[in-house]
Every structure is written in structure tokens, then in C-alpha cells.
Length: 398
Image (cartoon, rainbow, N blue to C red; front, side, top):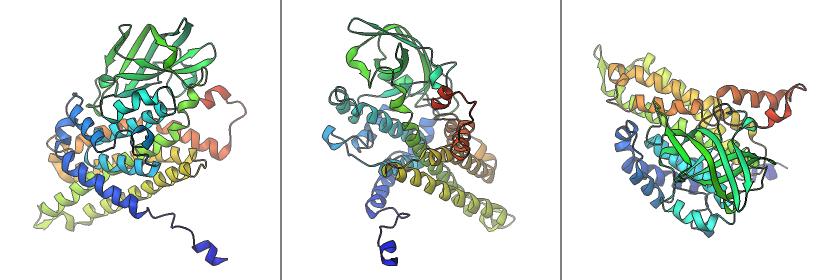
């Protein structure tokens, strides 16, 4: 009996292939992305050259199948890619993250994949997701944007807001309510009936965020995604996946801040001793490293469960509320340990803090995640409206 139990692959150790992939991505990111992170993070200009560079490395749309020209990576490999790029440049990691999620949605549409995926993989096409509305964030079922069927397609009207990546996007996956319910459409953002607005955000600035207003925008039938009235089914389960990727991005960014702090405190002296000789410096670092490592493996656990086809909603929600908060606390301690220089934009710590803070909102606030976990533990209250309960999604920023 024991021989059977011990003969299985080691589930808590990543394969040699994945670790080799990690080293490859880390080497690339540290050499090509880390040196320019701070300058890019302080700019509102989308770094198209970085996007193309990521595409050349096969990191844009990393999970797209080989049939369509992609790498066909699994979820763990995609998570590692997001993690290691974030260790060098959080905004570049968001490009990898978003292309992974949106590329997967496009590939599931047989009539869209052959047309659009080559341009996406080449870094020539950028997509974004328009789900949130001014009065509809976590309750995606409350959307007011409408889709009216007309000859040859649809007319869309309404506003979608808090769309990350909008300023540089060519197309958006837009959700609007038809007579059958929430429906997804692929919309060309250059359409003259669409008005864009960019938001002024403290972080994630090169990626950007904004809103669009659709005024009777015509969308041909060929741009319908999935089935009419079942648009939310395209994305709701995806949040269980994307939350784990975002958790890994937050963790890696915090660890990069810790690496900088360890180096600084070993070199900086106070009262004749290096700062690293004081327990008041080293103990907080030890605590953060412990918690971040635990959170990393919760991310891997969620991704592994997904790959195995098992439920992972609870684990993904745990990752989403916990990892960004752990990361922010770690980065803030790193700022303090650097003293006055850590509070300035001479170092990337403040930019890292601002970028990671975006994850407190995007893909679901901490309160939404805890509600999901509580429902997994206690079940749904009989009085809870089933429609609202089934459409809790992202809280904003996607």
C-alpha cells in the first residue's frame, strides 16, 4: 500500500522543465526589462517596443496552441511567465497576463482565431476587456449597455468603464445585454461611433485605463463571441484563473523590492554597523519572505487544480485578497528600510507600490473575494438574490 502512495510524482515541486523555463524568462526579463522599468512606470506612453519584444519571446498569448502559432503552454508555465516578468517590470507582466486571458477567449472562437491570433502573437494586435460599467462592477449582471439585433449584426449602446489597457488597444471584448441576456462582442475601437476617455491613475500608467461610450455602434454578426445571452459564461470561470496569475505578479514584485532592500541594508551603515546586522531590519524581511512563499504555493495550488479539472474558486479568491495585501506590506517595509531615498521616485519602490496597489481593485476587491470564500464555507444564504450571487465578478478594472 505504501509503495503505491509514494510512487506518484512529487506534487509540491515544479518539474525541471518548468524551473528551466523560469530561469530563461528571468534571465531575459532582468537583462531586457528591469533596467528601464522605473522610467517606463513614470510615463503614460505605452511601450510598444516592449510589447513586441515580449511577443518575440513567445510570451504574448503564451497559452495559444501550436496550431495557431503559439507555445501551447500550460497554466503553470503561464503563471511562471507572469511571475518572472513582474519581478523585472510589473507593467510588462500585465501585458503578458492580459494577452494570455484574452488570447484564450479568442482561440475558443473558431471563426476569429485564424484571423486574429497571428497578429496578437506577433505583438501587432492588442485587446482589452470591457465588462465593468459606471454602476455595474462586481454585479456584472446589472449591466445597462444594450445590444439590439439589426440586419447583418448588432447595434451597441452604453458605457463601459475601468477598462485596463484601453488607451493602446485596437479591439475590445465588450459585454452588452441583448433580449436573451448578457452577450459578448468583439468591437473595433477605431469605429467613429465610439468615444474613448483615459483615466489619470497613480500606477499601471504605461498600460493605462479608461472608458468607452458606444453610440449605436454596429457590430457584424461575425464578431459575436459565444452564444447570445451567454456572454458572462465566457469570463466568469476565467476569473478563477486570472486571479492566480495576478497573485504571482504581486508576490514577485514584492520579492524584487526585498532583494533591493537586502542589498541596500548590507551596504548602508548606521552606528558603525551595517543595517543588516540589526534584527529590527532582518526579522521583518524574514517574515515577509515566509508569507510570500506561502502565498506563491497557494497560487500554484489553484493553477494545478484548474489543470486537473478540479474546483478552485475558493483558492483563487484566497489568492486574490491575500497576495496583493502581503505584497504591499512588504514593499512598504522596504520603503521604510531605505529611509528618505525609498520615499522618492529616484528608486522604483514607490512605482512598484503604486503598480501593485491596482490589484486591490482589478479582478475583484478583497471584500468580494472574502464573500466568495465565505459562500464556499457556509453556503448561500436563502435570502441572497441568485442572479446577483451568480454574477459577482471583478469589482472593477478589467
